Image (cartoon, rainbow, N blue to C red; front, top):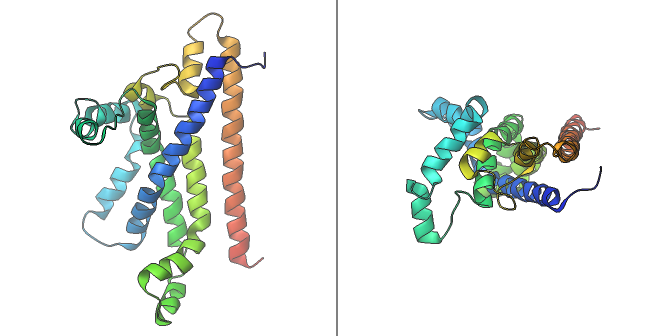
Length: 231
């Protein structure tokens, strides 16, 4: 019962691959947006904050449909990227990574923003008075202080990517070996009479990975709290 079929192993590997690239691809954008939301003051800041967190409150199917409209083969962005750079998202594993990145993006941004908000600005000011420019202050003072929040956001985004179903299946369908991740593989196995054992095995794997990610996130937060307290 615990032996995995080749199709199940493919779904597990693809989920890890999609989750990794979804997390890595959204990391620089999430960090920039988190800095903007925490430090900038401009008209439309509240609107930007609402847009960033929109995937959390919208049905995932709606998010997937919007991605299909924008990045599909006939969509404005999808057609441009395909013709200009040869990059295709629709019905490819890259599209699954994009959908997962969008769904996990709010969690990553929120974790980073909370960490940035907690930084003592006087430390940055002290570094600036010693002659360091903005970029050097950010690299040597700000980034080390917010690193636990960055790591926690990455972990949560990765875990969210592993569990994404609605946006993925709407945008890239459920193609075995190409876009079939753990959630869609479980859904497929539940549609056949002999698939319950396979669905159960994949469910256990999903639970194990999710629990490990949450424990890792909590460990990062606890370590950050101890360091901030000087322990």
